[in-house]
Image (cartoon, rainbow, N blue to C red):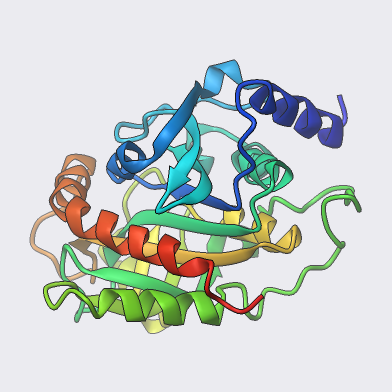
Amino acid sequence: MPLYEQLLEATAAIQARTALKPTVALILGSGLGSLAEEVRDATGIPYEEIPHFARSTVAGHAGRLLIGTLEGVPVVVMQGRFHFYEGYSPQIITFPVRVMHLLGAQTLIVTNAAGGVNPAYRPGDFMLIRDHINFPGLAGVNPLIGPNEDRLGERFPALAKAYDPQLRALARSVAARWPEMTLHEGIYTMVAGPSFETGAELKALRLLGTDAVGMSTVPEVIVARHAGMRVLGLSLITNTATGEESEEVNHAEVLTAAKTAQPLFVALVRGIISGIANLPA
């Protein structure tokens, strides 16, 4: 079945379960799924019940789609995402973004757990993504490779301003309400994973200007911008990753750090959602 017909089938299956038309889409990264509990009047749909959706196989990713309201704003929430390292193609990874756009979402808030390459970053800090470096993309792994579907977006989308400046300004103003919250702004680099980076690789990333490193987010941002969506990227720093650590990171440590930061994360995202309606078009 052609991609566009797959998207329509998935969209129709979701619309059969709810009449709500979301305006904002959220993707919740590793250990950050508790925000889904804040969604009101939610319709929850396991991924396996949506045609052509993949399955989340990673701890910390619940694997369901929620449609409801957050701060009075209609939202669609991915409680868990798909990753390249799970064996999925970039097209499969980003399929839900296209579905969420067809459901009505014009803004994407994408979150992740990331290692702090910048030595000033500490576990529990947050980082607004100002720009990214797409290592898999530089090696030819891009969700837009192949025939372009003009109904989804133009052949050569610009990414120079992929992360919306107005949304970033809103996030900074919201974060200022909590003195205990540290919000940086920097460069996110995507690597393929699933192995964590070597010390030499981290030092190389730092030389390239990387502030935080992770294994997701960039393909979703590319497809969202291909569709003309506004994008806000938010990383939770779960560990230091400067290449000079005496102990190696592990996924359990990432989930623990995410759990500790969840109250501030929920407050930050709820504040951003509340302010989106007041932004200029």
